[in-house]
Amino acid sequence: MNFLELPKIELHCHLDGSLRAETIIDIAKKEGIQLPSFNKEGLEEKLIAPLECESLDEYLERFSLPNLVMQSKESLRRITFELFEDAARENVKYLEVRFAPLLHTLKGLDVEEVIQAVIEGMREAESCYEIKGNIILCCMRTMSVDRAFEVVEKGKQFLGKGVVAIDLCASEEEGFCHSFIDPIRLAKEYGYRVTIHAGEAGIGRNVLEAVELLGAERIGHGVFIKDCIEAYEIVKEKQIVLEMCPTSNIQTKAVHHYSEHPIYKFHQDGIKVTINTDNRTVSNTTMEKEIYLVNNEFNLGEEDYRQIYLNSVEASFADHETKNWCLTFLS
Ligand SMILES: O=c1[nH]cnc2c1ncn2[C@H]1C[C@H](O)[C@@H](CO)O1
Ligand SMILES: [Zn+2]
Image (cartoon, rainbow, N blue to C red; front, side):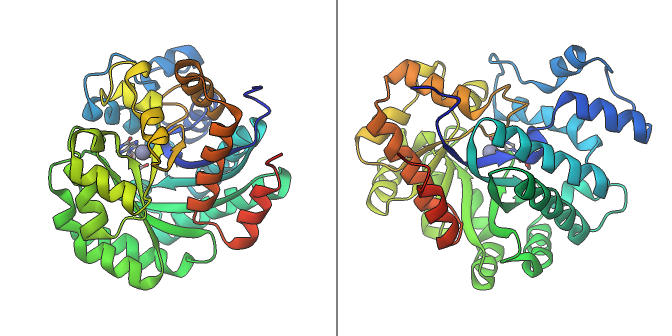
């Protein structure tokens, strides 16, 4: 397989984890923001989480730096454009990008302005490259439930205009789903689709609850269904799609080595898996690399890749026309 040329679909990619180091330096200089290093390699040392990270929480510490330069409309537009440009260059045809709007209001932008700027960057890239996209709004589990309601309410006007779904992210506590039933129910009523980060930090039961209590249609990661039979069964039976991100899972210590990653076992057992980057910069990766790594461990055949591509298209929150367009790239 030629991994660069393969058509690709990406469903799980965080905007604030996917900035080019050069862009952070450039924006910081223009906006007078202090950085730990103004040299690409020096900055990347601070941005990239090591493979030897201890935990998800340690991994998440890498996000404060990029968020310093994501506080103006112009930088949000540019950063989004560049992410789609990077993805298009490795033949990603459809990208769902996610971010937490509340993290970008520290210098006075309101939530609506943040979302609008990201949509503009995405639209601009769609007009320059052969790629289409949609946006997933993240609510931070570390913030109050009221703030999740705020994201749901303020993002509502963008549904059908670039925004498609809601997500819960950040540190993963046991039983977190119970606290977010009301805002996610409201989001569903408004027409948001639902994907939830769960089963990434040791607690498979969170996946069961994300499906049963929050109505998750897709799960971010879901690695730990391997240790929770009820979660495993519900994912398999309801064909809930797993957005898997192998390198990120090593960094956060969900798995210790690529060979231990359950993605291929799940796939062989009929679970719908997809391959994603999670964070291109923080995980120092690309779609090409993630597909290469999975192939390297598990010797993916062309039929396996075709199935994974189809899983991604079917599970995407795109409209029918876009899904059909994505299918035209399968030979
Ligand atoms: O893999 C992840 N799990 C949980 N939260 C994550 C992951 N990657 C990024 N995030 C958080 C940190 C970002 O600031 C936030 C919004 O993109 O989402
Ligand atoms: Zn994620």
